[in-house]
Amino acid sequence: MAAAFVGALTVFLAPDEWAGRLAFAISLVPFVGSLYLWSGFEAGGNALLGGEIAYATQIEWLEVGGRSVSWFVGLDGISLPLFVLTTFLVPLAILSAWTPVDTRQSQFYGLMLFMEANLLGVFAALDFFLWFVFWEAVLVPMYFLIGIWGGPRRKYAAIKFFVYTNAASLLMFIGFMSLVFALGDSVSSFALPEIAQAIAAGDLGTWFGIPPDRIAMVAFLAMFLGFAVKVPIVPFHTWLPDAHVQAPTPASVLLAGVLLKMGTYALLRFNFTMLPEQASMLAIPIAAIAVVSVIYGAMLALAQKDLKRIVAYSSVSSMGYVILGLVVFTEYGVGGATFQMVAHGLISGLMFMAVGVIYNATHTRMVGDMAGMADRMPVTVGILVAGAFGYMGLPLMAGFAGEFFIFVGSLSAPALPYAPVFTALAMFGIVIVAGYLLSAMQSTLFGPFELETDYEVGPAAFHDVAPLAVLLVAIIVLGVAPDIFFEMIRDAAVPVVEGVTIDG
Image (cartoon, rainbow, N blue to C red):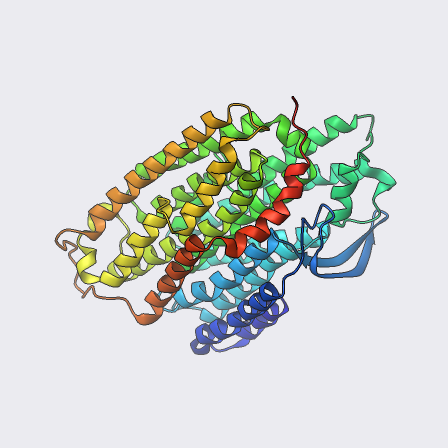
């Protein structure tokens, strides 16, 4: 985090002509650091439920309302994979910006590194106030990246993104603070492990005469709605396509690859870990929302003609699988949902980058305007097709592993009535995904080249293709050897599952 913060300031002050290469070099420092943390990772269990926290650092900061706020950071099996995903995607996103970003480069790359620092803070913070500061700070660089370097409707998209997510944050904040006040003197700080364990111990009391079970349910709903916007879940998804279509390619990569995972990560940490009984009571409506997101997101993608909008709606569909995995409360369901967050981060990053490379060469993303791109850009097209297969859940790719774990966990879920029905409906979404992706690929990539331009359309530069190749390798490696992450994820997911009481 410190390397990214200092790097952001350094790049801000650097000349434009150096900014891209300097930002790429600096972004490798957090990546190497995260690999070092991964190599020495020895923690077990869930950080919020009494598990061992790796690299824990807690320093008293200030006092608010009689409770201490501290710089409390650390990693467990749920946060480490997302931490590594962030440091892995940022250098590739910066590399993908070298061709399209040609104005105010030092500011652009400085904001990218500033956003990385705050994203890492979201996944590492274990104190609510510290976490909330990072959570909100992420919005600022993304707002400027869309609003300054975006497409023709960039200001509208940036404001819509900021208003939606900021309003959702306020709702979430109110929900969480109601829990803190209802805990009274049983907690002395805003440390998330202390609060989670106090709730699990039954320390929630009355607040303004409201009984604890009602406070817990209201807090659950407020936080769920707040995080649902960030995921996004249908019907709170309308900001996402506008943000993606108007955002520059590197911002889209981080928006789909990491920012959406903030919502599902927060749902897992706050709703499903701290209030599992309320999640179990609402299992059927939450599962229904997840399935609707899968099917509706896929149907919307099927109707689009803009390649970037197709990938954006595909993300709405993919996040539905993650929500389904969480709500089934099984070892494979929760573990698979977390694994799918990483898998989708890699696959969506590849898809957005590939679409960006094609757009740089053709100046269009419209399916009806292109054909025969495979003859002009064979390497880029080959990687794009492979990424599409990853989205479809082709075996031996990361997407298949994540969805397989979720389906295994959801088919035998005692906490979710009618679990096989929800699973079958969600699996139907894979068929729709395959339909619209194959149709779009066939229309734009194969057949005779028909795009009329007054410039030559040819193979992309090495620095444009290299990030795509690296992402494809990572997708295959994670698909062939999912245990790289899944064992540590499952170890942290089991305590969450054990927090649910199954009637009967």
